[in-house]
Amino acid sequence: MDVSDEFIMRVVYEKKENVMELDTWHPAHTRWGFLRSLSTAVTMFALVSLFGTGGGFAAAGEKCATSQACWDPPYPNMPDIAPPVVRTSKYFPVPASERGPAIDPGKGYRVQSLGVGAYMVTEGVYQMMLIVHNDGVLLADAPPSIGLKITQAVAEVAAGKKITHLIYSHAHADHIGFAGELKKTNPGLKIIAHEETKRLLARAKDPRRPLPTETFGGIGQKFTLKVGGQSLHLEYPGPNHQPGNVEIYHAASKTLTLVDVVFPGWMMWRRLALAQDIPGYFEVVRNLNGKYDFAVLIAGHLNRAGTRADVTNQLEFLGDLHAAANEGLAGTKIGETMNPDDLTNPWAVFDNYIDRVTIDCVNKLTPKWKSRLAGYDAYIYDQCMSMEQSLRLDGPSQ
Image 1 (cartoon, rainbow, N blue to C red):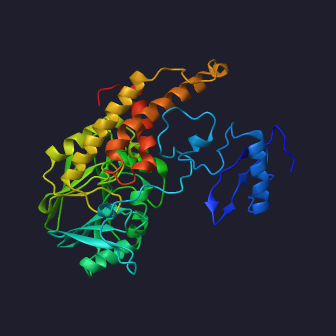
Image 2 (image 1 turned 30 degrees about the vertical axis):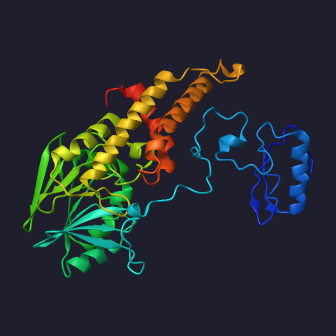
Image 3 (image 1 turned 90 degrees about the horizontal axis):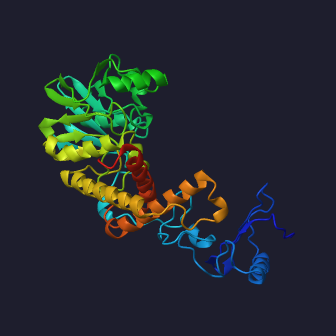
């Protein structure tokens, strides 16, 4: 094998049944496949020993806690958690309490009775609400991941009844992308949403997400849906996860549906659940427990339903995240640790600064929160990056 200056090689040593595996590549085109031969591994080990382990090589037998440990030079104080776009061999274990109740593999979904005709339906990753009324069934959301199981769940709890109403929590396809199929099998289906959701769906022109048949508008405006002896209250609290993302409250069962805002017992989805208005997102979470007398929160994701305590827990994390990112922004000096040749590159300077702010933020949060939020390690970097950006652009008051 030719060894030249242009040949870039990453060598990761991992003992697997006494066989050393190496992964190599060429910057212009993949010239070398994955090398499995022990003899080749030994040869490469000799080359690394000859030329040293600097310049990005891990020492022989060394485990890299993160990819940064294998790079030259790593950031100072790098967390022992893999950063984004870096493969990790094992994520933090998920506590049994956050896995939720078991789902019958034969059915592929679980229906949880909430009383007074209210139910939560989940396949373990997505959640939706189902309300049985005198004249049929009302749904909040129609995730395509649940799909045909929605109809099965309806038959299970309300045999012989049709779906009469569908409420859109917001416009994202992963939560309402099965609506088009439901409309085909339930003629006359009424679809209710906020006017912002209708605007976004009109732009999308997606047959999977038919336009709502009835809308309400404004921030803070309430909409009451009464059908077949059941009543639901809808309100748009203002921009948060997405414009038009509404709160859906069933007072009879004390059930609140609010999607993609609170993640009970878990780290939020990346970038504060892709919140399009982070100060608005904070405000919504801050107000929930005082605004509604709910006992159950259908949050749109994962297996178990949420509680008021879950809202309090996430609000506490958000406060700590805000403080950690703010401290990182104030205490991190621009340009430190950089190659002097890069100081004339403003993009590089700022990238380096944001990276170090993020690292500081992650390190501050990890001791307290790594065991309190399932999936903490998957998205903690994302949360810190989103928070520092919002503090710089939206201001510190959130």
